Image: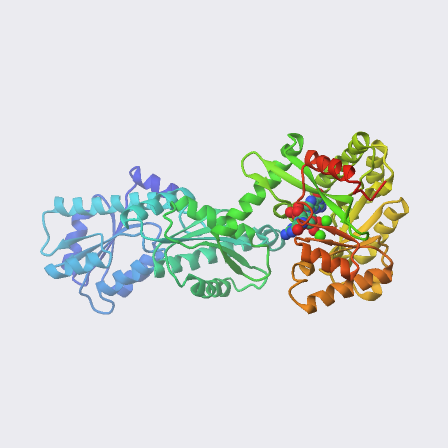
Length: 570
Ligand code: C2E
Ligand code: CA
Ligand code: CA
């Protein structure tokens, strides 16, 4: 580039005249040699040797079309298809009109007709061709990445947008390519090896876009973008493209990941298409084989929503957007059902999304540990509430709280719960802990140890969602629990088939064997309630009695039950 700029400043350029006609060579040479360094070749083969040798210093080739050995057409084609020689402009010498068009088509910069025009005309044509070519090299070099020859990011997006405009926003697919652990490749094998890999990817992408149309760029250090005319078959074609690139790199230690946004007709702009493709690419983990994934709109909205909930959680806690609801549990052992206890269930009143049920955020918060903070908030609220009801109604109403499996790995769990009880002047037996069965089966040893510790402190444990996990009978008999809570799905079908009824019967028998009470939740009808009573179930929770209620409404329920002396616990 430096060299080119200097030449532009006034150095003498070199020209090669290729013609088998000695006289023609001499005439042209005479016309040009005052201004240019001129060399000569009498046929295509000799010319090619000189061009290869002097490729850096040659500014122009003047080429006769009809020559023995290698003719002008063939030489021109050869030069145009060679990456390094392509930049040298060629002016064609011809005496036939038709040949002019033909040679311009295969890439000649201009033509000079025989017999020759006035020298000034020829000098002007030569000068203009050289200048145009040099300008285009300068432009080419600033818009392209030196190593791979692909566009720089800015030009890529500029040309891409122009392509969209010219093609009337024809559907285009966006592909983002990343090299897995590229820094490791650089560290282990050296930068020059890393550069070689980048170069090979560049070559493959050049080839790809010259076959399919479109544009390619090197976006960042090890990231590439390809903008392709949309294909419905991209999912099928991509593995082939990937195989070609892998083969060219030919190193099993190097793998690529491809994120794709396939045009779905939603008329996204080019930048958005690449944002989405990048998201798809980022989600692919470092894998040891090259792989790809397509951006999916629905999945993306879900992820955005989830991310929003995670971001909003802290603020929601401090702004009291979370409310604890209470659902009553009734004992059905006696003649008539009696209020026995309650389960604390969290609700989120989000300023934008309205009421969000825990099903939407509990597992999300379990994934990142946020659940611990939320659960502690609920335990505390529940303890405060038990104390408040005691103050108002003079009775203790035990409350079950949900304890996530994540909490079970907190070494301070027992201390935290004890502290909460103590601060509210409560006996530890007032807070019942619901732990889902699957937690026991996933990490049994650790969970069992944690549960033993909690029970030692006086907390009572209810195994939640019993029947949804895979506890073996053998394991169950050694489990430290105080109640079994049947999974709701068994209650749902209990009146529909005898088989379901028998299944619930068996689970109640297991509880008998373990000598613990049975709780059935999700009980919605009188029929279900009566059947459960017949089967020997002890406690019922469900819409049949009440939905989960805000504390004030739960208070009103307590008041009513007290009046009717329907309260089982003192
Ligand atoms: P879960 O512990 O099994 O709670 C029972 C769920 O069943 C609650 O859903 C309750 O509202 C619902 N339910 C109660 N009676 C009926 C009924 O008769 N019919 C039907 N169809 N459903 C009934 P909710 O409140 O949406 O909670 C869903 C799950 O979220 C809970 O299932 C629990 O696993 C979790 N969860 C709720 N609050 C907390 C919390 O504070 N901490 C933790 N870690 N998890 C919680
Ligand atoms: Ca529960
Ligand atoms: Ca449950």
